[in-house]
Image 1 (tube, one colour):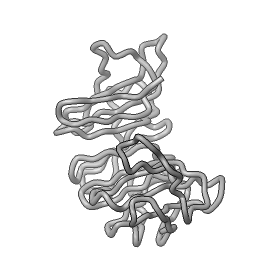
Image 2 (cartoon, rainbow, N blue to C red):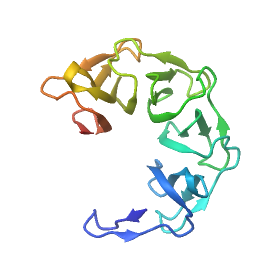
Image 3 (tube, rainbow, N blue to C red):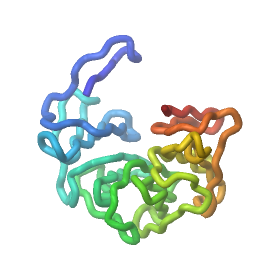
Length: 212
């Protein structure tokens, strides 16, 4: 992990206390606490937390059922960790984790996004799963998706965007949108090429995608 204190002009290594290959990073709502998810293949797997903006880190795996972390999302005072077998949730800034995967098959969750208590999780090959109760119960949502691997999910206003893998020659995949909380999704083009979309970022007036 590298950290910048001057808006990205300069960077310094910031991984004191870490002993793992970092797979994903999430910043909590208070702006001071960072969470880093470590892959299960190298070093001490699980979740690392920093309370000093990334200067030092400690592992916080209490209650975590699967230490192979694939995705993080922080919203509505809850932290969701997508793992290789489902989802874990913390309601107290990572002090304690519990499995929150009822209705979710045992599969890798690689992206998570939310609007208040409505949360969607993207999977490696099984479209998206959603919950209306902040992660207690999940159901699959796939109507309208043109590809099954959901790499990124972003909630904006009352809509969710999802970035998937793509088969450009067939016109399948890329950016998808739902305006009915996942009941139906539609592919979005409007000048955007059909491509693998790996990251989504934005707000009510702007949306940025990172793909290849």
